Amino acid sequence: MALTNEELTDIWARYQNITSRAGIEVATSKDDLRTAVEDVETWIDANQVSYNTALPEPYKTDASAQEKALMLSLVAAKMYEVI
Image (cartoon, rainbow, N blue to C red; front, side, top):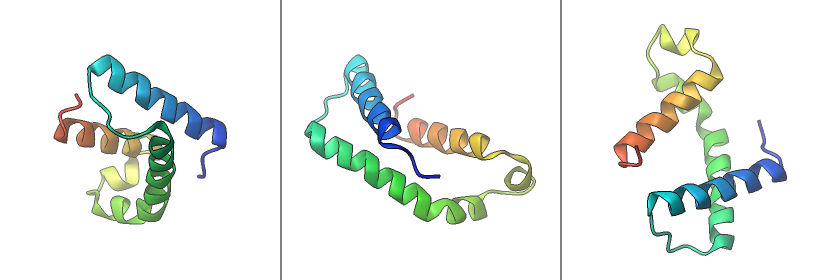
């Protein structure tokens, strides 16, 4: 599902807000961050099948797309000490 320009802008703004509140120093320009948001969306679209294939049954079959997205985001956040 392609995100709208408004949704991409919301992600970009939330990222800046979250990193600021967490004291995470961002060395990338705002324009480059916006490009990164777009590229992450492209990567996710291109790798959905690979991610789903890596999931074990019965989770793969039983979990919704929203649950799988939450799982991915939480594991990545924990791995990189965001949470």
